[in-house]
Image (cartoon, rainbow, N blue to C red; front, side):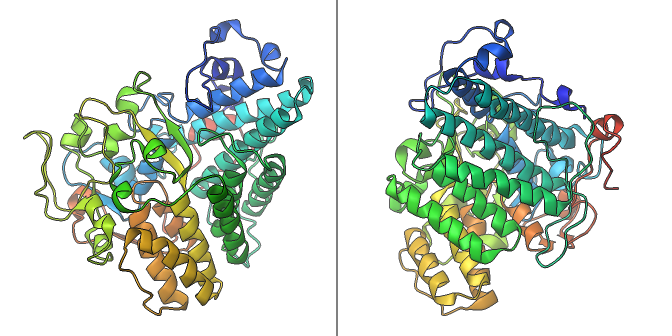
Amino acid sequence: MRYNKISTIVLAAAMALGLSSCSGDYLDTVPSNKVSEGSINASLENLYIALNGIHKEMVSQETGYQCLGGEPGFMFCRDMEADDITWITNTWCKAAYLGWSCNMNESSGYNIKYWTIYYQWILNANKIIAGVEEAPMTDAALYNQVKGEALCIRAWAHFNLVQLYAKRYAAGGNNTQDGIPYRLTAVTEEQARNSVEEVYQLINADLDEACKLLVGINPGYHHYSEMVAWGLKARVAMAKQDYTNAATYAAKAIQLAEANGGALMQGDQLMCGFSDICSDTKEAMYAARTPDDKTVYFYSFYAYMSWNFNATAIRQGVKCINADTYDTMSETDLRRAWFDPTGEMEVPAKTYVKQPYQNRKFTARSSADAVGDVAFMRLAEMYLTEAEALARAGQTAQAQEVFTKFQVTRDPSYVSKGNAGDALAEEIMNSRRVELWGEGFRFYDLKRLNLPIHRGRNFVQTFCTFIDKEAGADGWVWEIPKNETDFNKLCTKNY
């Protein structure tokens, strides 16, 4: 897609969408059509407001597709592609994601919007990165924060794109396969796809610089911080099967988070419903929170992934966990309460369909209110990442220690099973599947590990199109949108 068309929200518009990272209050700003890019680059303070605009765009109606309300929509739709979410009523997005019809369709809007929006955020991040070099150096700490966060956004967006639109990174290989164009400047020129190896090198270069710039910076969960930058490095290392570094980076993120007051949920906190996770718990490391008076209506995460909001996608589109995944939990695992294996639990009204294994993890604030917190990075993810990485690196004792520290917060009766190697990694992965259900990780996890999809006994093939999908089959790599390849002749197709 033409790069200067991808980002219809330029920095001026982002500035008009600014919000305060410290309190979550929205700033009063002049209309976007009254703000020039030069005005934004006139000061670091203006660039910080523009940066706020990108964070706000993470939970926006920009795509025009209600199920794709920014990154929260991308998250659960990615999970639909894998093996842990199903439903057997209401056909909302059934073919696009559950059946993979969008994956190899270069003209599918459900495909195009991912490419468009991630590159939109990349373009705006690049404008900020250029802008901080033009703005007067009035505050070194603010310079470091703005540039560091923009680098994180650029790296994170490219990381999502390369995982979707390219073959997986294979540790030990040369990884010369086509990746995606890595945009380092806000330009409109045609650009070829960097190799997967080059993309990961550039991602890590951006994150390495961000980690240096963000040292000591903890602006609150609405913004990227030093701990989140290290968390992103841990995700990237896992995708590369670089387990030693993944464990180190995740441990660093945990140490910084806990030093800043972060703590794993436990007990009754696990039933917070996630819509108030930022106020009811200390587990969110980076999250979006839409105040009650700033709703995004049916574009909200909770308009599609809660069990109680009053919308057709909830009443008739009941989201259920893979029954086989549910069965991996022990009888004393508190997360069993995140799901209803009977399908008989109370619902808000008779119009709400009931299904066995339906979601109770995500609870909207009320049946009439779909706004709420969406955690993009949680402390739980970092613990599970460190434990898995240690297990796959052969450090059994250390892996079990980290995993036990996490698991007892979910299952107070947990004791080590004595597993090691692949068996311990599988035990950790089972907990990860439950813990991160609906949060956008499962498709990426299967792809990085080169594992097949096997959907459980409560999936109906006539509804979801397929039950099994081999690793490496067509569709694991999404097709580059036609709008991109038509304009950018240097960008090759996947199919």
